[in-house]
Each structure stands twice: as C-alpha cells, then as structure tokens.
Length: 512
Image (cartoon, rainbow, N blue to C red; front, side, top):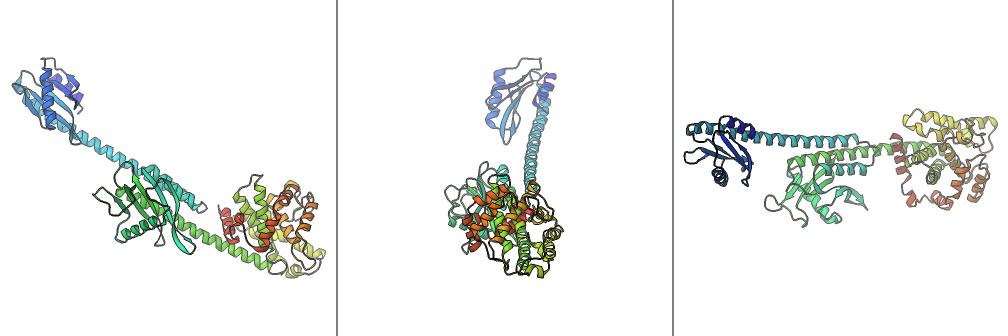
C-alpha cells in the first residue's frame, strides 16, 4: 500500500498522519479534520524514533495517542511516519494494528521492488551477453581476418564489462621461440604488456590456477591481500585461456573494474564464453588455411606438371602469376580495384595455361613452327582450361583471365575475337604478363629476347595486341625490380609473401 493511500484512509477515519524524511522535513501532512495535532509534538516523536532507527512502533503523548515508526529500506530509515489518534484513546489500539500492517506491507513492497530491479538488471545483463555471443557467432567467417575478429571480441566486451582495459594475447613462433604476442585489445591495461616477462608470468600463473581446477585467474584486495604480486596499478585482474585442440594457445585478460571491486562468477562465465568463441574461430581459421594451402599446392603441382612437359616453359605459370600481380597492383594505384581483385588476377595468371593439359604432347613439345592444324589445336587451350575450372564453383571469378588471355586489343585474338573494352580486365593483364614472360624466355625455335627488346615489342604493339592504358602502366613500372624478383626469387617488402602463402590468401578471396 502506498503512503498517500494509507494516509487518506486514516484521514477518513479521523486520524492525522505526518510523514518526515530523514532530515525531519515534512513530506506529507494529512488531517482527518476532527482535531488539531500538535505539530511540534509530532516532530519530536519523529526525531526520537529516527534516532532509534527502529521499525518498531513507538507510543508517545500523554495518553499514548501518537504512534510513530521508521520506514526501513536497505537496513536504514528512509522516512518516518507519525499517526496522531487524537483524544479518542480507545482508537489507538486499532490504529496501531493498521499501522503495523501498513509497515509490513511497505517493507514487502520495498523488497519486491528491489527483487524486480535485481532480476531486471540480471535479465538485461544476460540479454547483452547473449547479443554479444550472437554478434560474434554471426561474424565467425573463416574469410575474416583473425585480428579483426579478436578486436571485435575486445570492443564488445568493453561495452558490457566496465574495465580500464581488455586484451588478447596469442602464442606465436618468433625466431624458433614461442612468445605471447598482443593480438587485440582496447583501453589501458594495468600490466606492462610490452614486457615479455610480465605477460609470461601472468600466463604461467593462469595455467597453475587452471591446473588446480579453477576456470580463471582472478585477483584483488577484496579478501584482504592479493594472492600474487602485481604492478602497483593493478586493482583487480582476470585472465582466462584460449584453448584449441586441448592446448592453451593464448589468453584474454582484463584489469581494473570501474564499478566493482572484483570480478564475480558471472564475469568469469562471460569471459570464458567469449574466449571459447575466439579459440573456435582461430581453430577454424587454421583448418581453413590448411585447406587453402592444400588446394593451392595441388593447383601449383598440376600447373608445374604441365609446364614440366617442356623444359623451356618450366616455371612459366609461376612467373606469369607474379607479373600479373605486379601489373594489377600498379593498376590499382589509379583505378578502383581492391586487394581481392589482385588476388584473383594472381590466381588467373597462375592457372592461365591449365587448358594445355588437353593439348597433345607432340604439339606442346614440337621444336619448330606449328602447322596451321597444330596451331588450331593449341588455340583450344584457353577454352579447355576455362571448361575444366568452370566445374569448380569458387573458380568462376578467375575464368575471364583464363579464357581471354589470348584476346587482342584489335580483335584478332582467340577464342572469341573480342576487342578493346569487350576484353575483361583480367584477360588484358594476363595477356601482357604471358607475353612478357614468353618473349624473355628461351624457346626451342628462338632465343630469349632481352628485357629492353621485350619492352620495345610491347610498346610497339600497344593498341594492336595490348591494351594501351594497361601496357603503359606496365612499361612505366620499375621493371628492373620486377626482373630481379623473377630471376632471384627474392621478394622485397612489397612481395614479402611466399607464392604458396599468397596463393592460399588468393584462394581465400575466391571462397569469400
């Protein structure tokens, strides 16, 4: 029952009700209109009962006609209620009974309200945690960068658990030594994560705690003293493992809660759930990378087996892939193509001659000039290659480079006789890469051209065989550096990936 409702009911029975706050300011003065109360006496009653901090009903006044008690909330007085029964003393006993019922009801309402508030808060927290896990699961795509996913986990956790800093450390192999590397984080950690020693010590402590049967390492001064010695900035800390295939591969840590003194069981549960999601993602990514490397390795083995049919074309497809990537990257500086497009162009260059698997070895290995009939057979290899790869759904985006790498800008190429802007960009780029490598490589029927002569040949055929714009981009690039990469196999910073690694990344772009 609300205070105003109770005061109104009492007033209808001729009882005057006063309600005071803890500073003895009058919050409510409800008169039954049958007599005039002594306001000073009522205030004195309120003062006395407030001093006692008691929820018991006190009687005062000459005839005990003034009844008073504290309204308790969270163990302390929140207000004081005084009921003046007036001169009719016989009514005091009934008013006292009604007041006792009201106080009991008021206390129950307070408890219920607090319980509802607590449950609502827990439900809201649980909802936020479920939404976090849902967000992470919907972003768990193997084509996504692991660093982006881990950063999403840290940022999302920071929105739910108010701490100074959160970070994820993963074990990495650096110079034949396994070290914990900061892989994602947000806020400011209270430990010196740049010191290998402090992070390694924390990792070892966490492993010891896990071995003892706990789900997480937590530490604070709540129970008097810290369990471990920490940096002076650490007020409280939590560390949970990232485990993959029953092996701990890293940890998620957080320091210094902003709204509490220590991490509780709910925090431990949430941190472990998020860490598990992160570990599953990393495991899936590792499996995906293995599959990508297996696929690119198989494709390279197939391509190399084709190139190996002729000692003069050995390594040709690898070089065409590198040159295609080179041209595409320089093209991207002025045109709108992204990294995934470059990766697809690289793969297209790598697989451009895969159709030669359907050409007879007599034609492929013939030392002299091909007859017209043999040349017609050789012209089938782009269509054969595109036909083979068209059976693989994920390869559809690289087919233009394979099918059209022998189309000429003037329309005199094959297999479709496309001209100018009708030739796909991928086909134009692989055409230049294929031609440059062919001209600068030994053949049974001619010697290799010098790099300068090959460049002059390309320049002379701009607008005829080669797209003028793409040809100029290639001619203006640092061919000396490209040639060094092709001859030595030593990649500079721009080409730091091994061909197998970049090929695997390119396969990932197709799957994505």
